[in-house]
Amino acid sequence: MSFDRGKELADRGSSGDPPPSPSRYESQKRRDWNTFGQYLRNQRPPVHISQCNSNHVLEFLRYLDQFGKTKVHLQGCLFYGQPEPPAPCACPLRQAWGSLDSLIGRLRAAYEENGGSPESNPFATGVIRIYLREVKECQAKARGIPYKKKKKATKGGEDSSST
Image (cartoon, rainbow, N blue to C red; front, side, top):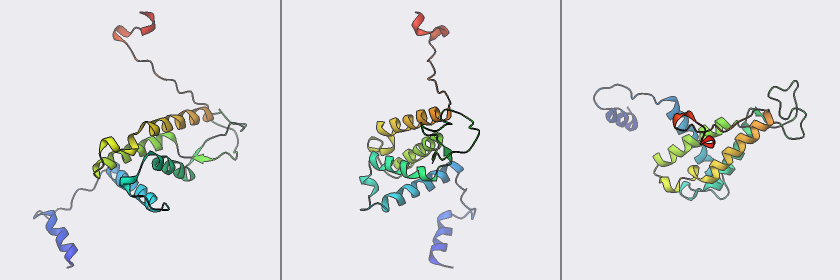
């Protein structure tokens, strides 16, 4: 038995039961955190997570677009604004807004779980929120999906403009 294997068994305690497998969310979060860390290490020069800022996060999100599966029609495209275009076109594939939003949520949590302070979290900045909102609006227009802001209900269900 190797030392590492013995230590692993000792760390589990005397029960001998394997540790519970992580949830899908926890697995995704760990994978995303490792991917982001690898992205930073591949920068020239490499960037340590403590030096990471919102610009690095934005560059990472743009880098991920090349692996996207969501067709986002350009303004000059015949199918711009059509939710279900009748034919293929040469418009680029991008990461879907919902995927990016979920990714940022997981990375935001992972940053703090890995020792980063909430005040310096590069995934929680206004710049990132603005970027995500712009992606959402751009993709909605390109696909012809109207996203309307929901009005906040007031007491009694009345619209605040009528009072």
